[in-house]
Image 1 (cartoon, rainbow, N blue to C red):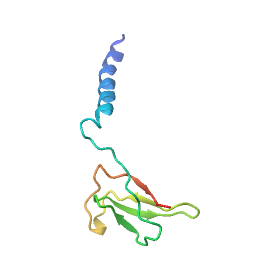
Image 2 (image 1 turned 180 degrees about the vertical axis):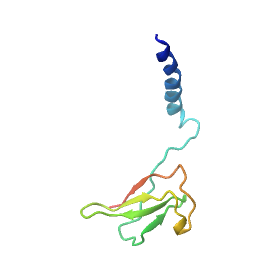
Image 3 (image 1 turned 90 degrees about the vertical axis):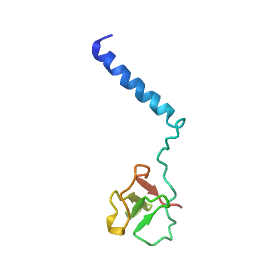
Image 4 (image 1 turned 60 degrees about the horizontal axis):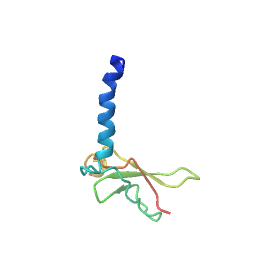
Length: 91
């Protein structure tokens, strides 16, 4: 095996092992909580776990809720790593 291939094998194996063991060691994966219902009228929405989202709606498309990375303007702390990037509106 060439030297470069040997150097790349160890990190690849380590990443594969870490990905398969995430559940076993209690690392949570990002899961998108439910978005507010269509009747919700506000521009911003904060989930119970502290993730803040802003409403986005284009004509002909469903409402989406996009993560606000630094929601200081609505009095919330920065988004954590556990926050989903986008929430799809409930139908």
